[in-house]
Length: 117
Image (cartoon, rainbow, N blue to C red; front, side, top):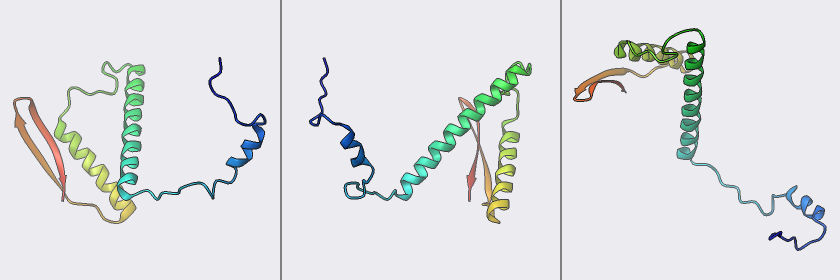
């Protein structure tokens, strides 16, 4: 039983209505916050896919933990990431922000991070 009925027996006439939406379409300019949210979402998804690919390739090449390195110095990883990000910023923009390393200890373990100044 079809619950959706067309008011017009000839639906092909309605196909042409979508070709020129200029009169009926509301055009909304995205805000900066919306654009930033979209970019962050895209980059987050790209990073997740890259991580899964690296993990799969590592497993395929015989690394016991794939792309996950459980025995690493976290501060070395953070420093390498900062050096790479600084190089990318400098190469593309001609300037890179100063970075301060932050480290703290808690009952859950040591946390390492960076602050951009």
